[in-house]
Length: 332
Ligand SMILES: Nc1ncnc2c1ncn2[C@@H]1O[C@H](COP(=O)(O)OP(=O)(O)OP(=O)(O)O)[C@@H](O)[C@H]1O
Ligand SMILES: [Mg+2]
Image 1 (tube, rainbow, N blue to C red):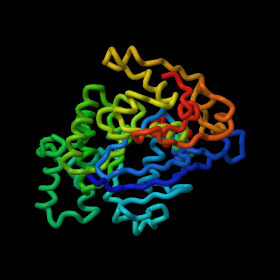
Image 2: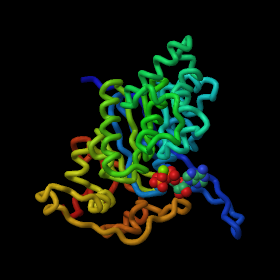
Image 3: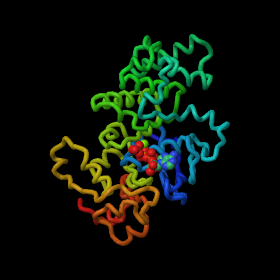
Image 4: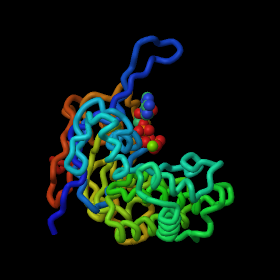
């Protein structure tokens, strides 16, 4: 099957200027996303994982042009949107949508959930009359397994899981091609997380949408992702098919992250070597020279402290940015 690229991201950089706080008056630059290149195929789900502050949200917002990138380029459905003026971008906005972590924030408490779901239909002129409007809202409720008769209720009458379903229904209203889910299930308890993730997988099959699924939790993205990109300090350090990443992690950071995920398979559990990271995640204000992970890496050598490693395909489209891994110096 010939897969098309839906979004092509090249050398994306997103820096923020901050001042040095109360005492400092020197401006500091936060390297939230640094040199990220990724081609997203139509219909796939890409998981974006990494610790808090590694740039996942900034990446998700920048690729949907909710920010103006500092550098690099973004192509969406064949159009370069990097510098596209808002007026022109408006038509594409309905095709790429963002779903937030906390449905409390995205749902207006004063509006019925039906009007929240229906709002994109009106903004984007997708319905011609009230009958069509109501029919489409009922359809969207059914897609997320909510009873359409609930449309007249208010968000406070809903549970957390139901509110997230409402937020998902709203995100589907404009018939998007690409959805970024930013920690979309993180606020829910574990069993509910699995149900929402399954629902999202079903919706994707039915509607042929491309997903970018952001989570700090590797076990959440495992089942829904086709490929996974591991972020560290604003960079992609490993990119691979999901199964392959869990079976055969190549970056010491990914290995360390995975040791925090319980593996139910006792054979795998046995084979797994445990890697502990030293220290805290460094600040993206002064990212370390060379490999961003070197200050915490037990395998770092001189070159890691001076030159940033590039992503290299180690076979089967499994890419890693780590000298030790590329040179086969990591324990298996
Ligand atoms: N608007 C902003 N101005 C200044 N710095 C910012 C801004 N937004 C994000 N940052 C910084 O950029 C870095 C990346 O933040 P981001 O929110 O993208 O990380 P994240 O991976 O989504 O984290 P989390 O898992 O906590 O949601 C952080 O150091 C953050 O403080
Ligand atoms: Mg975030």
